[in-house]
Image 1: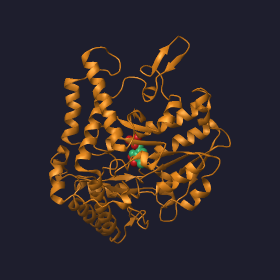
Image 2 (image 1 turned 90 degrees about the vertical axis):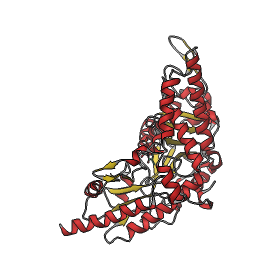
Image 3 (image 1 turned 180 degrees about the horizontal axis):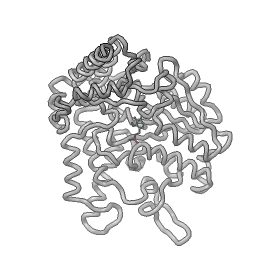
Image 4 (image 1 turned 60 degrees about the vertical axis):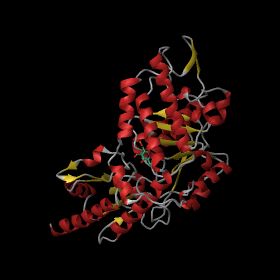
Amino acid sequence: MDIRTATAAALTDQEVLRLREDFPILQSEVNGHPLVYLDSGATSQRPFAVLDAEREFATTLNAAVHRGAHTLAAEATVAFEDARAALAEFIGADENEVVWTSNATEAVNLVAYSLSNASAGRGGPEADRLRLGPGDEIVTTEMEHHANLIPWQELAARTGATLRVVPLDDDGALRLDVAAELIGERTRLVAVTHVSNVLGVINPVEQLIAAAHAVGALVLLDACQSAPHLPLDVHALGVDFAVLSGHKMLGPTGIGALYGRRELLEIMPPFLTGGSMITTVTATEAEYLPPPQRFEAGTQRVSQAVALAAAVRYLQDVGMPRIAAHEAELGARLVAGLSAIDGVRVLGAGIDLPRVGLASFDIPGIHAHDVGQVLDDAGIAVRVGHHCAQPLHRRLGVTSSTRASTYLYTTGDEVDQVIDAVARTIDFFRRA
Ligand code: PLP
């Protein structure tokens, strides 16, 4: 489903209040105030269903997967593979196209290292078409989280390929006109974020995907900020790779995933090597399992995968289109409310694109850390700093910002509270 044509009804206030009862941490107090958690863009909170799934696995099924011959090991393996199937269905992929990783960062690095192994001649003749070298180009953007930038800088350094960066305009939007010029015959890979973790805008990635595929380049989509908040269908989008982190979508930390188009995973050399990813090993060489196991060396994060599947089911029960509609409303309320405060500059406010419930702002003369501190005193949790997106901040002329980000459990009242608290913060500092 395309969020631009989404017509689902937003969650009602009553529904959100009901959902909040599922999240124990949301009942807590911080600094004498009820917690107002507006940092879901950094990490989301977990409902009982997720906490219970992890505990239940540990108390009834815990065993290493794909190894033992005993009953628990077999049952744990089934639970692990069922979790993979659940995540695959959630993102519109086939089961064997999902590789478990520890987070999105590792998933991007997996692709970057695999391409560099292919460039080093590893992976056999089929992997040759993945080879990168001098004259080849990797295209990414100035909007990326460092996780989708530094691995490409390193890949370029290892292979002699050139990194090209799609710039932003003065508002912070991707310069699609420049992207159209940059993506050309030399481009081998385009790596782009679906939703900006600083601006909250949903990028028109379809255009970039079409441009990349027109020249035979691969596309890696950073879905960290989209998979938790929007309906996502990687097959419908036609991306070659997508990465996500479980902890941003109600799941535990320590688990993430790489989606890779099956034909690609089949020819990609592994990133990590060792146990669990082989068929036969001699003292001098090894044969590898087909994907996804080829990319899952070592003992896996089984309880985390099972808990992430519970998170996915929870999100599906609420309904991704409705979550997207709820967050679009919260995002609009956040941007409008913050922009209306004299002295606040909402980064990317002028961009005419649909949004999730996330906004970052700068208050000239007041450091983001001070803003964060005052909000924290009122029990409001926001993120301050560069949010792992230094190039974007530099382009917009700031070194840091304060970010408020919502999720399905965020109420409109909480959004209003942060807006009021920011206004009070400015008054406080101006009087001081
Ligand atoms: N990409 C985006 C857009 C993100 O927001 C994040 C996390 O903040 C990441 C990548 C990296 O995620 P992780 O640190 O879980 O690997």
